[in-house]
Image: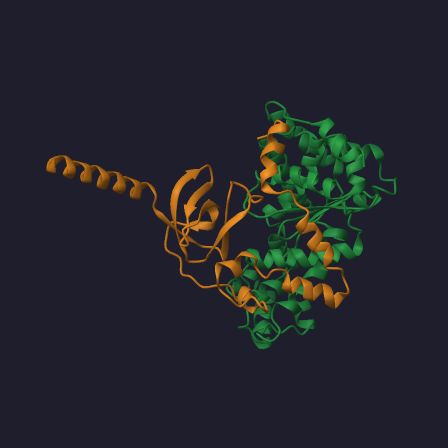
Length: 283
Length: 155
């Protein structure tokens, strides 16, 4: 449940189309390094949605090289149904979201730009009902809907990525437009979401947003809290959860935050354990 | 008879005027926006409008606008995709640069780059792009979502 989608500076550069030669790229990058991102807002505009979706596709291909995709149409559609119900309550309900199950025993979930959301089989086996699934998917959808990758770029990664782009000798010209940029971007984003994750502040924000999405959709918003509790109960010593804990510090603090949200929220929603069991537990 | 006709014309004109006042135009301010058959991204796309195009608002439902497009198609667009003020058109360089996708038509824009760049990336890296196709092809159709929500006691 880590994971971020760092939108890359190089991709923002690519978004400038074929109008920037390497000289202007270097100049803009240097300006940004020395003066901060605000100095070059025009040249480093955020990527638009079609670009974000294309990056999401590339990252999905990359994820597919790291994990085996579980090609179970019925299970995938069930997970996607839950995800879509939650995503419809997000800040970006008009973005098409795609959900996939990865055939791995480890507990993990992550989201790529453009609405591509992944959850492992190991995560599903830790769950008891649909509310827990909605809680986890809500968290991942929030990373997409809140564009955490864009914020990550603006915050701390701009310098490294600018330098990286220059080291790669990228030329954003009409002859070599998006393909070069997407290669670097997809590699970096995939590594980020699978191995590194978002900042703690972004994780907390996604927790809060996911809580609200699930609640608005009619689910018991305790689902994420219960999932985190199940993780803690299994423990960091278990090989299936060790990766999660190593990249997700503060799980117990996140549980406490969820408790606060639950205390302030009136009523409870659906858990749908039978439907979950029929769709997931039997597989 | 003549007076009745005049009165009818006046009523029709008034109604049309009111209708016009209630359905102001909006302009697309995103690179593209999908017009869908229902209020949700999982519904089928009935048309795609691109930046600068004008749509007519038929009605407002929550944050979704039921619109009529320049191609006389009707469907839902999320409010954030539209502006109250005229927007200068112009297609994305990204869409233009996609090989085989140079058209600025709504059809081309609807699919974005259609995975062209991502597939090139996957080929270069030796990744299986079939993974992406499988994921995109195995999502629930919009017509099952309503029943899923109802059966689950959801909203």
